[in-house]
Image (tube, rainbow, N blue to C red; front, side, top):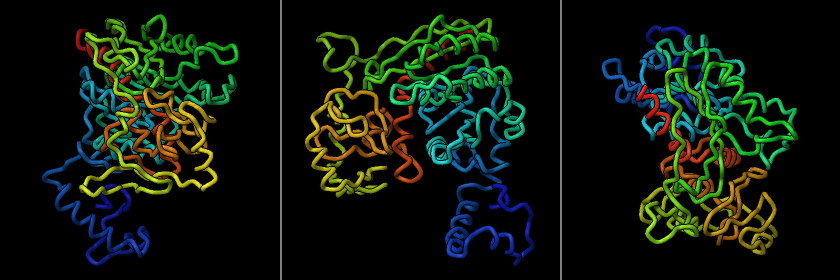
Length: 409
């Protein structure tokens, strides 16, 4: 099994364990050997490989060689994949993600676990080429779409807003890779703050970059608000969409929900649940309580439900913060609709009615992730994975419209 995933490069003779001994610490050998034997006998056999549902496919040459990307209307390559939120929205809309690129180890592991069967390349997008991707994934062919959420820290109101920040120009590699792969369309998602950063308009730069790469685009990116798509958050995101000649530009997504305070009787739109409703069935926790896999008395397991520990002094300060008030790192959420979630100092905002910061699971609920979505890595790294994500409902709305255009072409 280790040979198959490429960690041992030779086939040892019977009784030869040197490669295994060198690779695995002594304390882990027994458990790992047992699990690998079970995996190779039950989960993945030569007669019945399950590459399409395997979270280990990124590391398996056999699995990667089986990833097929036939010419069709519903395949996508996900750049700057993060924890997989943009990809999740596209999957819900009917796309199949055939590859993802993410440089952060913990976010890449989150992507792999929650999108089994998707090879995730841990690499800097600046250094990735279409030829390199196709060497890594020999069966990769022309995708229907290249989708990307480049880093937003240089544009965000919560960041430095430095027009010289090199991350501000990473969008150029999205169009480059889309052109090299021959993708039929391209989608870029980011924060509204890129409209203008210290006098520089990045909306114009991104649009011009996509057009230079051969894509027709909307005149302006579309701004979508999470609360208009069933997510109890006033977070807005910009979406740039480009298509090859012969494909109609997709129609702009229209809201599916209205927030509670805007919902009128007789409205044909669904009501966006309030933030309090979104969190009401999650367990009440004291600071420091909970677990990554918290088992409740009714045997239900709540994932990523470890509350951050606070000293009594910090708890007293939190207790005095009114709804909507407090510094950016300890702002108390309001019970109806949240502002954009910000992970300050590796912490999340304060719970609307408990004197602690919210858990990663509560933040994921507010973003619209499903409860079975597990965030990997140390607890200190998980808040940024959630806070940096686009609510999947927004990317799904864009993906549905794009898919209609691709299928009609």
